[in-house]
Structure formats: structure tokens, C-alpha cells
Image (cartoon, rainbow, N blue to C red; front, side, top):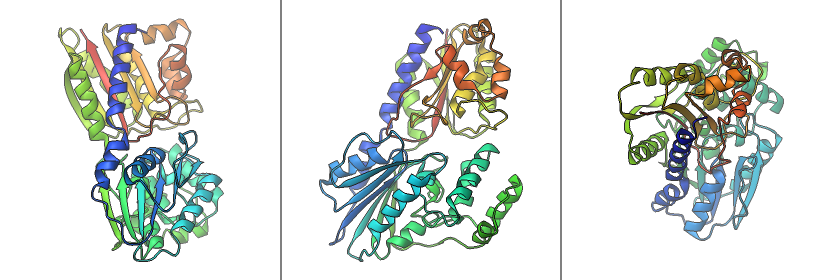
Length: 411
């Protein structure tokens, strides 16, 4: 690893994450919040749920009760008046189901004078769940969709119809109370009915689209699940006000700003990246090769969310795979590095936020008899990057606005 380049990368990562923490964004949205004469109940779900709930309680000063449902190891302490639960992600587990049931009980029996403050962030599709089929079948369907490379929109189109809280159904459970929803977006284009599967937003997808996805990926589902795919979700909700705060655009802008402060000329390639992780890594490497010898300090930024098509049984995540896939292309290209990280601090089922490679990584792995191409085929980027100090470790960050990849050329 080239120490100077790694320090540059770490500086950009830290600045980018600091700029997209949800505290200020949540409090900005709450300036428009007006409760009724009755109770205010807080429900927060997603990877950023604890941070969002803490910001809301600090701003409002008092609520009448509430529940946080977030990923394991994401609760950072007690919040006055709030019960905090940790549950499974990306596959829901029994703790997801139990915590969601508690959330439903907390909004049961509310009146038109009451208000539900609903704080939603990415990861809510797994964390906020009351399945209409068995938990085992829902977990199996989720795993199979992940394994076959289904994108987040396809996954959520299916999950909405198998759930008692997704696709606008949670808002229906809150009636006649008003729902004030603050959403931290983790899906490209900020489609409100897709973020965490839209528990409090009218669903734009159709039964026909769900059936096409089942056919596309050859999913085998039970007769009960098949029948649920034929039941439409709510298309209109009259008791909801929604505010979107935070997105991958802000993450990219923060990375761009820091790179410029450090003397790089920047190019924002896209904030809509949605291809396979390996392809993205190879593409970023090819861009650096094109500009080699320019004598300029250049930074190319791409935000979004790639996918990983499972071809092996290794350990890794989309950001680690993207980075490792860039290693062959920049091998020996002095001053070149590529890094990619998830803003939530967790990349796939690992403790890493992402991965870093530079022009020395390929040779370092070869000296350890590691075949990068075989590692990628096995989806085992985590172990390869760990061997050469290429893991990005941030711990849970408290936010979740997609991923960003940066390719640097330090001439």
C-alpha cells in the first residue's frame, strides 16, 4: 500500500461522512413539523434510525413514546422515552418481526388529534417487517433475490406485497392519526415508495410488475405468497406528509468538495451508478489509465449503488468487490488509487465499510500467491483486501445515503 495515497483516501472518506450525518438534516425538516393537540409517537426504522431519533428528540425536547428499530451494533445509547431494538439486515429475522409488532402496537388506537413522527432510512425493508407469509419463507425469498442480483427496486416490489407494513400499509395502520415522515434516501432518484419499501407512501408498483420479477428470476414461492402478489397495495394516502432529507447527491458533493480542497481537479462521473461492482471497478481503472501522464492531480467521483452477482461463497461486499476489480487495471500506474465505501459503514455481511486499492496492490497480492481474478470469482474480496491493508473500517456511521467510489491520480 502507498501510504500517502491511503492517507489522502482516508481524509476524503472522513470528510464525506461528516457532511452527510443526519442530525442537521432531520432538525431542518422538523422546522416544518406541527403536531396536533394529542400525542406524538415516534417510530424510526433503518440503519440510521438511532441517529435520526436522537436528533429528533433533542430538537423537540419531548415526545410521548417511541420505538427505534435498527441494525445490530447500531444503537449508541439510550434516548429518553424511546425503546431501542436491534434486528437483522439484509435478511429480516425474528427480532425484526418482534420490534415491528411493538411499533404497530404503539400506533394502535390513536386519534385524529395524534401524530406519528416516522423517521425512515435505508435498511428499513429488512428491519421494519411484519410478514404475511412465514418468516422462514420471507427470509428465503430475500436471500434468493440478493443472490441472483436483483436490484433494490425489484426486491422491494416483491417485499411490499408480502408485508403488513410496506407499500403504504403502515400509514393505514396509523389512521386516523397524521403521519409526518422524514426520509433519508438510499435509493437512486429518491423514489419515496421504494425507500425501505415505502411503509408510509402510496405504492406506484403493480401486481403485474411483481409477477414479472418472479418470472425473471425463476423464484419458487408458496401458493400463499402467489396469492398475495395479486393483492394491490394502497395507491392513495390522505394522512401523510413526507419530507426527503439527505441523498447520494450530497455524499458525492462532499467528496468532490474535499478533493478540490486537497488540490485535485474533480470530475463527477455520476450519482446514479447502478451496474455490477466488478464492471464499475474496471471502468474507474480504465479512466485513470486514460489520463496517466497528464501531469495533473485528478479525482473522478461516482456515487450510487452497484450490485454483486454471486458466483462464489467468499466474504465481501459491493464496495470491496468494486475496489478489488480496479486493482489489475491500475497495477504499476504510479499515483493511482481507487476506493469505494458505503456511507452506513457496513459493506455486505462484513465489518468493513468498503475497500481501497492502489498501484501497488496487485503486486502485493501476487507476492502472497493470491489470484485476484479467482478471488473475484469467489466473491472473496474481504480476505484479499485484509491481507494488504485494503479494508476501509469506519464502524456504524449513523447515516445511510448509498455509496461513493473515488479514483485518484496523484501525478
